[in-house]
Length: 377
Ligand SMILES: Cc1ncc(COP(=O)(O)O)c(C=O)c1O
Figure: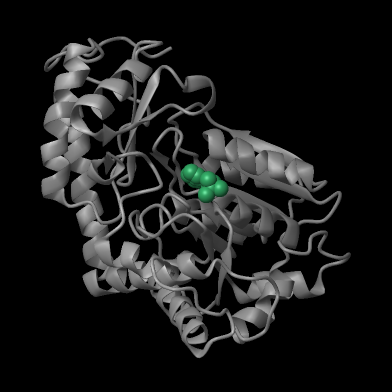
């Protein structure tokens, strides 16, 4: 039964009872005083979650992909040269979005699990005049975490705008928007924030806003224009499009719970979640996708023999009511991904690791200590 399942997929994640309850109330109006104050509170709480005191804060209805595309279409015009640092499925998607919107889109490509190297970025930024660089914080497809600070520093020294996709970061993997100095960072609600899917939270620097205001040529989108959404963030009474009210009501609760826990403590809990999964799987001898030292605290991906991922997933779900994810794209049948974020407690994770280990051993995709399987494709 769905209600008994433990979701250990890399989003959407398990919701607290309070977050669920917030969605099952009679409908309220988007122009009501209650919704107005909910919206305002979400923006304040999102500032807390991003550590965004200096920049501007957005919240709008849509999935993480809308965050990606609104950043691209708002900053980039036809013929602008952009660079996407790509080390997984979501980097590739970002590159594709740049292409879709007419950018001369270059990629700084890395193999699955390999973090980006700031020296490579510096060299690349010297080779052409780029308008913006797009970086994924944690690529959920491989669980690699990129060294954001030095990468953004390279962009700043080259005078290039930087955009961070932190859909699998904010609320779990440390991100401090003000200290980082990126121009745009965004997340979606269904991962470490532990809200339902359906809203984008996006932070923008004043430099990004200036650029958007002064750019040559219209932003070629209505709904995805950050310029068009700006007045709504200043006064949520203004109508642009009907927000997903229930999602926002639940998001307010999820963000309040995040603040009640405290961001530092939440990061610490996620560090403990990440290291527990890595330790337990490491003892089994699994072959992690992300390089050592660049493994995320929010998601863990590992290789399994081609074709085995589906069995592991099925058995865990049917026998233990634990839902894990397979790979994404080409790696679908040869990778397993475990999401460990949101409201997941260390205790709950530890108890789920026992059946996960049993099933991995029974399916023959991992071996005991010290003799890792050579399963990398
Ligand atoms: C890093 C990253 N970026 C973007 C997205 C796209 O988000 P959505 O599926 O909510 O559109 C995801 C989704 O998992 C993601 O993990």
